[in-house]
Amino acid sequence: MDNRCSDRRDVPGEPGFEVLRHAVQCNCHISDARHAADFSLCIYLLKMREFYRWEQGIGLTETLPREAVGAWLSERESLWDDLLEAAYAPLPVFRQRIDPFDDAAINARLRPHGLIYGGGLGAGGKPLFFLGTLQRAERRDGLDVVVVADEHARDLAAPPAMLRDGQITVRRESLRRVLWERIEAWQWRKRDPRLGALLDDYGFDDDPDGALERITEHEIETVILHELGEARAGARLGPDWERMLGDLGRSRGEAYARAVRDHLADCLTTLPELIGRDDRPALQLYLAGLDGPRRTLFPALAACDAGDAKRLGQVVAIGAQHWSAVAGALLALWREGGENRGAAIAARAEAAALH
Image (cartoon, helix red, strand yellow):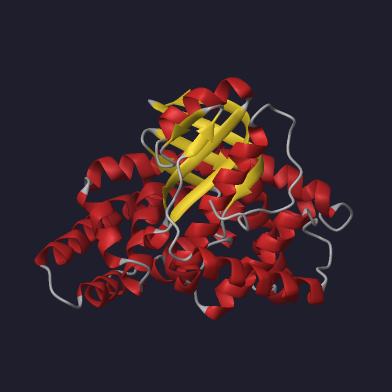
């Protein structure tokens, strides 16, 4: 393993932990070396700034040192150059070496130590690895649900939640970051007054860190509901859907296909549950957070009021049928083959926008 594959994060004093954390982080660096160029320049720079903040333990509300970030970025890109041809290494899990994609075997040994590991594929087929502290675990609708607290190793891409092999993993630290980025973007543009009203309700101006913690804790349930919806959507669409996403790579077609499935998952589970509970803060944040392809495809939902449960329920019920049919049409396009499947899939999804 390359001896440059390291960083300076503080770690718990668990026997063997540092060796394991180092190995996980090294695989993270290898994944980033291979896939960092997949991002647009703007997204890449934003992710690198956030990654530096995490790695150095700098709070979300603190200002980053510009020169230090620049020097670190150069060093990290140099490290990636060295690791570009490196292979993902087995993990030394307390004296037993295990394939880094064998989550079940790794976690069987880690969970008694209060740790949780993830090794799967994300958007564009990028391998995603992380090591964190297990906050809590439960069983929901036939799926294992684990919530991860502090993350001790991770890569450039850090999704707040993933569904893999019958397990929903929610990464609290990543969720908190995503929520902060949404709040920060709103502060710059202030396009949607619903988010401003929600922040006022949480007392954000007086205590931003405390408000962010309260919002994060509340939103964990919304994230779990979405992944439960993903499981239901996946059962409807079958294994070809994931094959299609893998075939499309990181493309416009993939982005629109993911947005269609997100809407299907949320219309099947997330939104009906939140409406039934009259969880207006969660609904308000959900509607204010619709952006990109999701907003483009479902303007009828974006225009809803979180307080109008009747209208919202009607739109969601229509959406469940609509997005199921659209997803089926996208799969049919993919199965037809052809060099321009990605463009055709994006165009078909856009043409099906629900107003």
